[in-house]
Length: 210
Image 1 (spheres, rainbow, N blue to C red):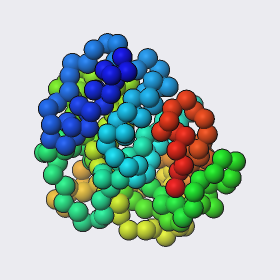
Image 2: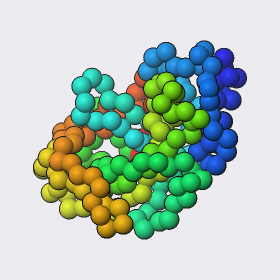
Image 3: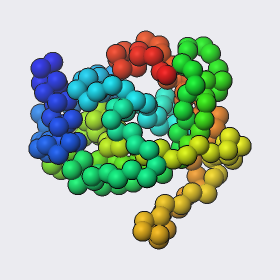
Image 4: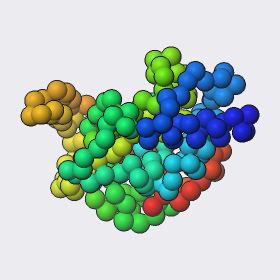
């Protein structure tokens, strides 16, 4: 199974870069729990390259879900992306922080934050049939991350009403999506403190967060 999981990870990384779509996936390779999801993430990031940052689902009930994001999937505002090659099919407006210091276990995460940013995350589909692909495979595929475009730093005061901040997504000048619901600043900070290096059963979650 080890070699099979490594082969799956290589095929996922290749599919994100214009290679053959992945699927169907053998049942024995589908992660049975979150620990196995993170084990698949370890394999994927080992083939995708250096970790550039982290994606965290913050603000929901229970333990946060996270995934490392390869450095080569981060882009500056104004970049042009090849959505067809990289299988991007959905854009999501997200909130990000840049760290000015390493996150350390037991230390306040807020003190390590250097700046806050709007980001546009491109969700990608490397699968033959995404709807038929088990959720744990999609989570293992770095939570379907295809790219992250980082916007300019925001005034730090914006965090005070982060959970009710009105956000709109425009396509060719037309507003296509709006929301005024999201994670609170307290939830974001709590998720970062959870992410600080500690034994969680997977190598990717034991790496320094910087």
